[in-house]
Image (cartoon, rainbow, N blue to C red; front, side, top):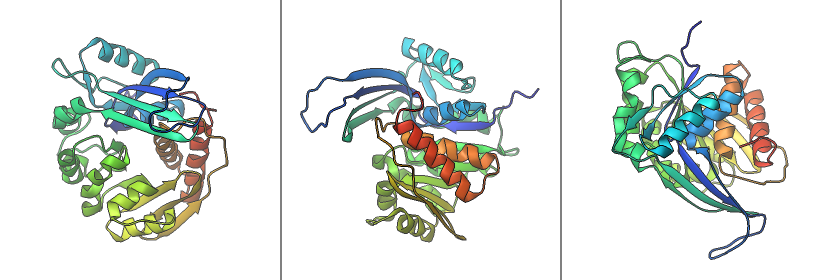
Length: 297
């Protein structure tokens, strides 16, 4: 039996520290709630969802050779995520993400992905120098990529021979990193998964809905754009046209990781040969289940 992974997830693999409260919060709020520490990062969240759907995802990222890194590696293995290709540096600590969520959504978050950024192209060695691929024999499968990588590295990926055969699926990680996806707009590569705010930042416009945002991304050079808008209509656009779907109405109990769950579920549906409308519907339902708490984090 082949041990090759079904999909590669490239980007942030770290610990999420999430504080959640059931009350509305504002700047300066000091309220009771729960604080959890779970494996996180965009690439990791996508990989965990893919594994729940029965796929074998492999992670390409940077994880420190510290106690937190060892614990994270062990946890990844129990979750069905392959870690053999991770870059592990003795000099860089394991990255972390911290967020506070209230009943009114995400209040604030800080992503400390400095080790991933400093590791740079070293995390891509398994794809450029084997065993997963080389410039001469590029990896031919799906690659889920996140914007926690530097813009310079993302620019390299957009044009590198080692990625020319890959089906690139790209997320910006956060609105603050949305502009890092510009190289893929310029190159006309990959499927961009963005929310309405991130689409606006990439296009330097304000959009009323996901359809307008997705169409504008196509006009600006995107090969394909999937734009979500919270509980409002989502749109999947290509040069051939748009498909739009409304997400189910649910009670939102958490938000961190919802976009990653959506992206992973969409990839799984299309890998199973679902058409565009069905894939979008399945992804929206998976994200709704996640934010309502019906899927364990």
